[in-house]
Amino acid sequence: MIIFVTGGARSGKSDFAQDQAEKLEGKRLFLATAQAFDEEMSHRIQNHREQRGNRWDTVEEPIYLGRALKSVKNSYKTILVDCLTLWMSNLLLEYPDQDEKISEMLDDFFLSIDKFEGTIIVVSNEVGMGIVPDNRLARVYRDQLGFLNQRMAGAADEVYALLSGIPVRIK
Image 1 (spheres, rainbow, N blue to C red):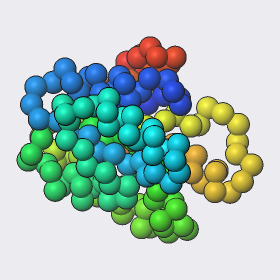
Image 2: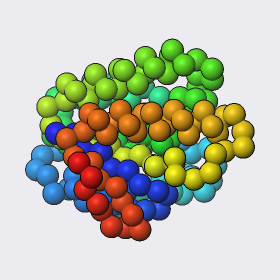
Image 3: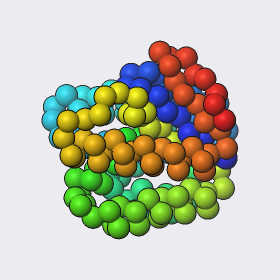
Image 4: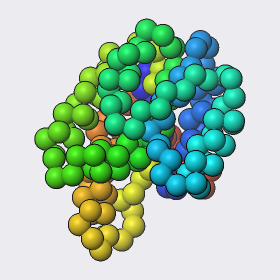
């Protein structure tokens, strides 16, 4: 089972995804893509860890999500990937102007989730509803994340959009 959760910033995506995962039986893994580049982000990451408590195992992997999923595929019943938004940012920073390498990383991720036998819940921001960004990197990011979100929604069994904290099932 693949569940995709999307929505705007601070719409309640992560809380909803975590709540859905905690309703399921078995061992859970939180696969985090965030990197603490500043003190404020360090605090956010720490707050999320404390919120999950000992109910979750955590793996932090900012780049190689496919590899991380393969390495734990038989150890967990539920995996929560939070989030594709930061992952795409990490990929674009790690592999600037290397569309082929990024495409390989995405293919590896989707192959890994297809082979996972439990429930995988994936979180991402919807970034395509605002104005067209004024710089190339921001436009590339918006476009690449939009394509990734479309692919994720297509692969998912269930898709939810969070609007002001309210989940709306769209698939």
